[in-house]
Length: 162
Ligand code: SME
Image (tube, rainbow, N blue to C red):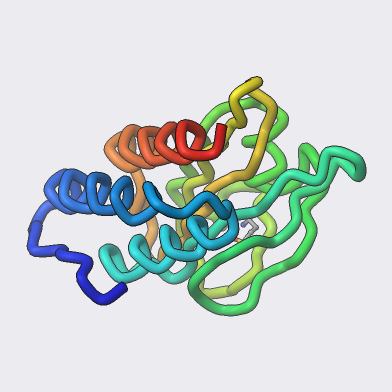
């Protein structure tokens, strides 16, 4: 898909442009992996973050497993409760890390990462399906605006894959 338009200049404008585009992009495709791959590509193109993608919940092993992403290679498995991703699963909430160097439980997949946001993606029974993880090369890249709009994106994914 090379038709993603990102003419917005502010973070809010970009989110407001890409969320409807993502909705229409995934509307006709039932495969979760395909949709998460395209969503990762749209977010990477729109924001230029260092890394953005998904870890999928493996409930039998109580681990997150690396899923579709854009960016440098990343760690493949994260136990429940570990790292920012595992904590977002354990707490059931979005976590914004302003400075990963000041977050004791952060798992560094790249030394370039300076800030991070992790957003839970639920299935229709409110069981964790995945987490959306984004990393940036600047401190304080993510805030409540990202938490709000990426949370809406997570809801779009839940609705599409119920
Ligand atoms: N920083 C994450 C690990 C995943 S990478 O950032 C892609 C964490 O602490 O869980």
